[in-house]
Structure formats: C-alpha cells, structure tokens
Image (cartoon, rainbow, N blue to C red; front, top):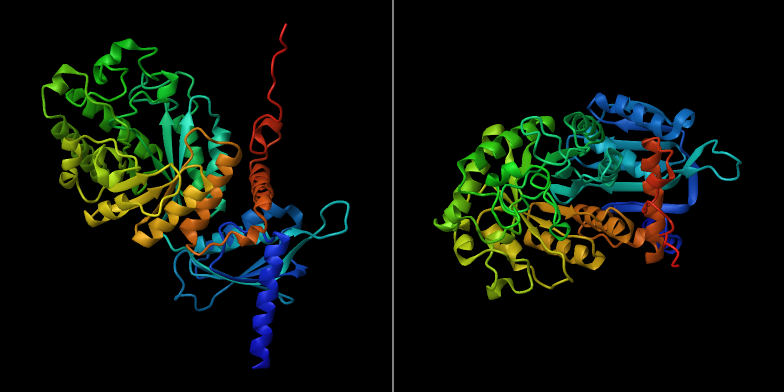
Length: 497
C-alpha cells in the first residue's frame, strides 16, 4: 500500500512539474507518461527491443546526425513486442540507461523523435559535451489511422520550404503529407501546364520522397480535376497556364478559367496523363488527392446545354476509377457535395448546387471525403456524420485557428472517422504555422491531449521554435531567412517624401 501511494505521489509530482515548468516539450502529447523533471540522467546509450533489424541502422544514422560524436550508443535486442501496434512504442529512462521497445521500425522512429524532444545538453559547460534526459516512463500510440498535413507548393516556394514542412510533419508523428502544386509543377507530359519558373520538378519530388520515406511519412500528390483549375489563388487573378499560353483555353471554362471544362473529352485525357505522371513521381503511394472544391457554375455553352450534375458525377467517377486502376484511393474535398442554402449545413462550407449534391450517392464509396472547416468552433459538425453514414471514409480538415482546430479534431474523434488532414494553404509562417502543426498533431494522436506539457500557453511558441531550429540543423541551413517562423524580422516601410 505504501509503495502504491508513493508511486501515485511521484506521478502527481512529475505531472505538476511538467505543468509548472513548461517542459518537457513533447508534441504530440503521449498517451501515458510519468516524467520527473528534477531528475536527469546521462543520455549515453539506448537499448532498443525490436524485431526489425533495420531499426539498428536507422537509429545509429539519425542519432549521429542529431548528436554528432556525442551520439548515444545503440544496442538492438530481441524480445516479445508482438502485442504492440505498428506505430506503438514505449520508453523507460532511469539510472540504468534508456530503453525503447517497439514492434516496427516506425515505432522506433517515433520513440526516438520523443527522446530528441526530451534530451537537453548537459548543464554548466561552454560548449555541448554531453546530453541528459529526465527519468521517465512513456507508453504511447496514436488513436487515428490517418494523421496528415496538406501542403501547397506555389511558384514562389523554394524546395527547402516544402522540405522543412515535411520534416516537421514527420517529427510530430504525422504519417501523411499531401503536396498540392499551384502552378509550381514542371510537367514533362504537359510542359505548358504551370509557370516556367516553378521549383517542383520530378527530380525534387523524388528527392523529397526519399527524405519522407526515411523519416516515416508518406507523400500524397494532388491534382485539382474540377475547380481551382487556375492553379492560382482566386484573389490573385492569376492563371498558371493561360496567363502565358492562351492557346490552351479550350481546356477551361470561359469564366476566368476557374473550372476545368468537363464537356471537353480532351480534359480527362490530359488529367489522366498528369495524374499518372505525379503518381509515379511520388512513388505510387496508396492515395491521390483529386481536389474538386469551390467550383463555379458552368459558363461553357456545351456544359450549359447538358446536365452539369451528370457531367460532374461522371467526371469524378471516371477519374477516381482511373486512380484506383493505378493502385490508389482518391481523396476529395467535400464542399461541392452538400448544397449551398440547405439548412442542415448552416454555417458549414457548402458550395454544391441541389443537383450536384443529389448525386453524392452515385460516387464510388472508396473515395475518401475531406471535410474542411475553417471558422469559429462549433458544438456540432453534422457533415462528418453525414458522409460517414453514406458509407465514405472521412477526414476532418481544419485550418489555422487553435480553438477551431481543437474543436473539429475532437468532433472527428467523436464521429469515429478515419483521421485528420490539417491544411496550411499559403500560411507557412507565424502563429498560423504553429497552430496548424501543434493542434493537428496533438489531437490526431491523442484525443485527451491537454496541452499541459507545454505549461503556460506562452511557452508553446518557444517549444515550436526549438523544434523548427532542430529541423534547420538537420537540413544544414545557414541562411537567416530560412530560420524561425518568419522570413524577416522587420517589415520595411519606405520613407515618405
């Protein structure tokens, strides 16, 4: 009884010290943990219990990258880990050393990401000459199957920006990243499709895929096959193809070229070629995102003369069947599938017409619906349940706002859907970036995440800054513009004369 009371007391003390000191800086928050922040031990060795022999080489490689000559020595042992899930891990840190158990290489990766967030330099020296970690016991595994981040690649983006976002997603134990080109893709099958100076080449895609594979995250390509055909933000008025090459206008609706022209038989032929090119460049993953959000009514006379809902449905069916023939499932935004003005969706993002929304039952049920919501938190998100009851797998897709991210994520857990796909759009900076990663990774992993391991809310930026800096070290970054969460510290205002 005394021992049990002592254990409870120590756990309580550890938890209080976590909350009061704002450490450890763990993201996502583990399912179970007991961390004594006043008692640190040397981080000089790790014993890994895992049946996958690849875990040893992976651990040695990355520990050397992170800690150089001071990297902990690694010993791989065998043991009974068969009851552990493919992403599950446990960590024990005491005076005897640091031990990790996992049944897969992915579990080992996640354990070492957690240890990297726990480790700090030994105190009292001029330069780092050793590492220490707090006495801890951690048992951890994710609750959601799909945990992802949607990343846009604009023509202005350099490859290092996309790489940093992918690395951060992997570090925070997300297992998917959707990469959407906004005119940045340098296609070989359709060289006219996009800007001439886009940095998203097939060579860069393959380089990023190799990094993602090594870090344990799967990259998913996207091609919008309905709306957003401009590959440009609507506010910019740009069209990544037509602004430079007007001879290809027949592929697009006359009204700003915002939609693809669905009545043109050449459209599907081109889209299939682009899908195949992207899919193969990304290494043939299990998913492909086909977009389909925020389309406008048709302006093409041929489209207007037909049932547009039938055109839309048949187009999506044929494209999703083609994606399936390649070996992948389609992801698709939800908003065109629920009718604008329907009182059931009041306050939600609904952009579909009555006819198009009525055709939702005719779409293949293996399409995964990406239900996005970007406004203030709600108590109910009925569209999550609606699509699930129709037989679709569903992903909840929040953006930017901390309380909105949390509310939608908790609603996703309650609805029992497949997972969460956070979105960034063009907000790769500041609080938007911080909120997207912290809240999506925490609440897709752990529905009971308290955010208390960060202590005061004011400590969250410091934790995020630390992790961004670590990613910069991994990328061997030496340019000040490429550090932190803003490119510049001072916004320069020209002198007025």
